[in-house]
Length: 189
Image 1 (spheres, rainbow, N blue to C red):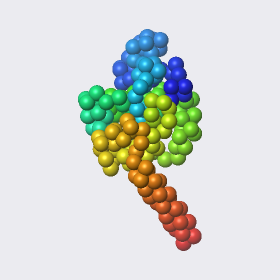
Image 2 (image 1 turned 30 degrees about the vertical axis):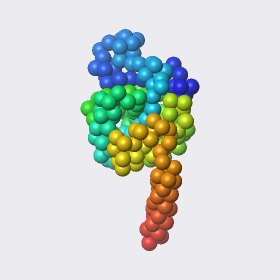
Image 3 (image 1 turned 180 degrees about the vertical axis):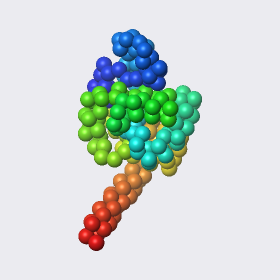
């Protein structure tokens, strides 16, 4: 994780309130260096967009868990990676509907790199990464929805229970297989 985000500046919500400042001053006051902000933490890459209804339904649960875990002093950070169509859409969505986590700047080319690296084909997607950069789970959304704040214990240990991981993978593969078969059948009808 550290190598991928080395020397990258992530925006905080404050960045959007500084629109009247020159870009350099805005960056100085409204961004943080990823190396510093993410060091030693479990990092959740949150791929999402304002136009995505499942994203809008998931964000409140993520906000609640993030608020509770940060209140407890847990070593966790979320980085929002926007799939919004415009910077204005991203800004409004992040500023008014997200928690106090960080975000990748709109239009940053790293978005494509991250989406490819973590095989993002649908959103919302929450990829949970150890401080070492190893993926703990690409099913963070399911963990949050199914386990609530308890999922953090396993994330910090770096091991979602193996049985849960395999069950989740099998369930998702079965769902995709069923959807594909049903879609093909519907298309032929």
